[in-house]
Length: 364
Image (cartoon, rainbow, N blue to C red; front, side, top):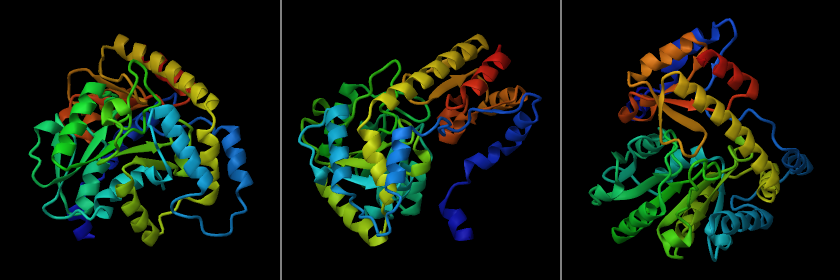
């Protein structure tokens, strides 16, 4: 176990346990806004598709059924504006976190290779580099990085934790720079359907990539837009050469999305109504929490998209966590996502309407 401990950082959520206990002791119960996990029902049409495919005794394919690939390519064209997408441009994966954690290893990266990710970021980007024993570096502007040895560049727009959205000009500049230096770009776009004060754009949009997918791959998830975190349903889209290599590796590793989940994804991507309804729920919760936090003396930065409010009282994030825990509200400290977040907290609006209303009451 010591070898594992040397390779991986401490699991950050363990540090939150005492504050969770404090919040849980509140007479009105805990309001847990620390984790962005869906709480609303899985849409009925998706449940029915899963049930209809329940009698699936054989092994599924890693590449997915033709129907699934049709659903993935069609969604990329409709939603992302991607052009000329074929089955070779898409690949289902077993949830996006698995992909993020093991991508450097599957790409064959190792000591001396560098993986770069935003200075404020989902911790699993660093974990993936560490698992591959590659070097890792955080950035504010990736085009200011030393390109020597840099093999994998992670983008994340909309951002977890800040909700920041990269503008078209910024995305275009980064993609061009990465291509100039032969650096592979993976863009984590799992929150792309949750833009509030901005309209997030994919790296696959022709205005960004110039109609070529060389050296770029986008990562998408159905966890948030369709409440399918429990289904482990995600996919990649982009450079067919990169995805072809990953497909072969994942075949050898048996990394296959279950057959019922594949059918559920087809149903989910073919329906926009449930996405609109879920957005409306999140929009109402976001507005209520945002107003309550501002009245309580917080300042909110970025947060123009995603499922989070990036909030500060200009004090240590742990002081803020303690203050809110005394009110029975649990949030995530900003330093979980990098030292640059040490004066912020991440507030998820994925709790039920009743719990969000209770948080608003307590903040008032």
